[in-house]
Length: 255
Ligand SMILES: NC(=O)c1ccc[n+]([C@@H]2O[C@H](COP(=O)([O-])OP(=O)(O)OC[C@H]3O[C@@H](n4cnc5c(N)ncnc54)[C@H](OP(=O)(O)O)[C@@H]3O)[C@@H](O)[C@H]2O)c1
Image (cartoon, rainbow, N blue to C red; front, top):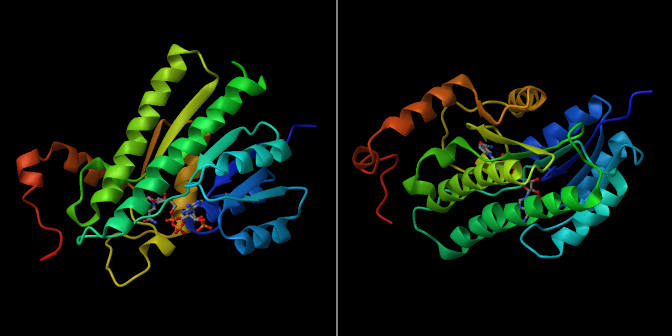
């Protein structure tokens, strides 16, 4: 009998992470899910059963999250796929310090904590090798393409995530680690992160985002940017000269 494939999803309690959890579970994967909201974790486990879903509540901004990840790994065994989805994002033209810091602590500190701890597990568990590589995928964003004035910490945090993955990918080759990476860069997706009074263009459904992501992961794509409109936009952003970019106005603000 073919061995069940397994994944860990950090940030599976809502939005993109929950959609990915549901899809993988629907395809028969064993999935370890994590996030802060215990009721949401419980809901998914009740729906699919405790023999297929394992859960750990954790706050990735806290050092204790690594012990929670270890407990989850004890239940799932060495997963084929480690998906880091957790993140927060806000428009913050007033540069409210608490908001800026929460974004950095979650998207930068939290992501580094979880991904580097998982790589430590890959190295120490002896469960991986040339024929069984761990696939680490992180949901970053097209927002990391260039600094956005209305979301300074968010766009910078997403660029940091992409740069970190690029560095890890080089390091893994240098050290011949059995790991491959995907950098998942969605455009706007209708999830809780976009809730609020702002208007966003070209928003796609979470179901559509889930299809794009899993197709890219199946194909082991190093960078997964979607959909085509955001691929075109981010290609354009990259060639706009800095002096022009920094004069663009996305919203009028006096803050
Ligand atoms: N929606 C978009 O337009 C869009 C576009 C590009 C990139 N993204 C990225 O996609 C990722 C998922 O966002 P989403 O759109 O699915 O929004 P979401 O529904 O708000 O999901 C955010 C997830 O992150 C988790 N999370 C937040 N802070 C956490 C913490 N301190 N510890 C552990 N988990 C934490 C949340 O779980 P708990 O609250 O239960 O902890 C939740 O599962 C984010 O990294 C976001 O930057 C989203």
